[in-house]
Amino acid sequence: MTVESTAARTPRRSAGSKAGTTGTKRTTRTTAKKDAGAKGTEPQLVQLLTPEGKRVKNAEFDKYVAGVTPEELRGLYRDMVLTRRFDAEATSLQRQGELGLWASLLGQEAAQIGSGRALRDDDYVFPTYREHGVAWCRGVDPTNLLGMFRGVNNGGWDPNGNNFHLYTIVIGSQTLHATGYAMGVAKDGADSAVIAYFGDGASSQGDVAESFTFSAVYNAPVVFFCQNNQWAISEPTEKQSRVPIYQRAQGFGFPGVRVDGNDVLGCLAVTRWALERARAGEGPTLVEAFTYRMGAHTTSDDPTRYRGDEERQAWEAKDPILRLRRYLEGSNHADEGFFAELEAESEALGKRVREAVRAMPDPDHFAIFENVYADGHALVDEERAQFAAYQASFADEGGN
Image (cartoon, helix red, strand yellow):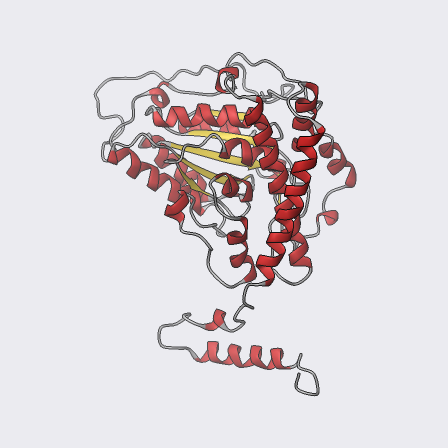
């Protein structure tokens, strides 16, 4: 399940110290069994809740969810349902022309809610542009996520108000931001942790490799949370990596683990474990949440051009919300009244999101041309004039 060196278990060093200067020779040893990426073997997967809603035991990770109450289980279910409802509403609003673009999280609710609820208030999050469920867990109002996608602001919240950084569009760069922030946390002597979210596609970026190197060398208190949703736009994971993503951590000297990304309890347990390691000074961890992007990469993408319906149907049977509902019902932890009340709350959220977006101002179509050059530029002026003519071509003959 994990690949861990003795270096990865040493106490946290000062961010200003150098690795390997103690004069003591250390021998690296692994705690893993045979390479899970070898031919004829399958990567090890942490799973606490099966697609059928059955609770399975795990000697290593059960303790991290042992205290979860029925009320908290209902809370996890509520989080996932409301996050999915918000996401669906945002997708519809984009189709209606209210948003310029939207990146759906459909199918990834368990990975985001499970990991998001594992965080403490003083932990810091560096997201990509799809972490709507994590934003929900951090108390960011869903409507604040939409201004950027409408083009009326650069992010609708104060990152320090929720310890949730602004969305990052550049692929993979937030892992470096997280690593630097975590090195600062260590230098300040704080016991909080940092988590960086990224996708399987971002794992191919040099920024991610650099962040792995720096975090390992400086023993930074950071968790790298990769949501492997199988597709980097139209590129499947197997064309990006010859080994499972979590095994890449081995080469950098810290542990990696693959968890069922559609199992909210598993994601909660594994992330708690990784965060505790970080806070205890044991350095970084790579978590690969093995999940699936049920919809398009963004609303500008057509997934039917590169994957078949049978693949999606197979993953629909592993739906994260359905499996938790089955567990709640089978354990008598929720009744029909709970689900009916949640359905009403879900519809109210959708209505609030619609009204909030439609009350937002229209984006300034010419703002893109501002602040490109400090003193202006002839080419930008030419492009602005061309765009103005294009916009004017849509005007009615009567001037309306």
